[in-house]
Length: 145
Image 1 (cartoon, rainbow, N blue to C red):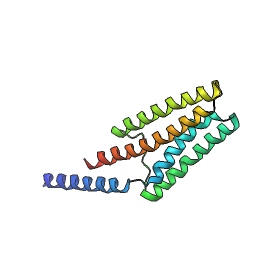
Image 2 (image 1 turned 90 degrees about the horizontal axis):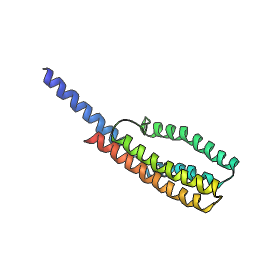
Image 3 (image 1 turned 180 degrees about the vertical axis):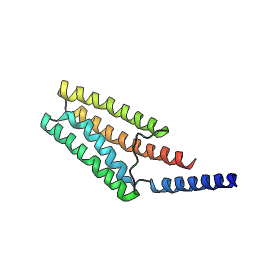
Image 4 (image 1 turned 30 degrees about the vertical axis):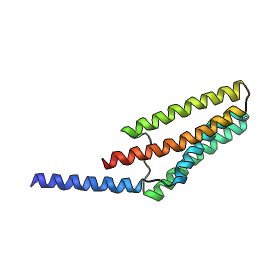
């Protein structure tokens, strides 16, 4: 009897994970929003301090909107730094984004070059989009394997 109960529980767990994996397929705009936020952060050193702070405030204001949108669309918000392989993806994307942000700070605030932070910001947006898509793939794979 206990073996049957255990198998039933495992089947229920697998079914719930499969349902969660299907629900977690983000629409393309969700990846684009994340990429644009990352790109905005990276491009911010191209501007004077007040505009830079306005960009940062805008980014911070978008975070609760994204959380609310995810909860409305999926019924939940999944933290990007959850344990497992997804954390490695998130930390990798973070390391790359912070590295290009530091380059942007150097070019924009030290060398007063506006073009480099804009170019780096475009790269940051692309990396953010691709990183978001990779994170989702790894998350769904973790749930379905």
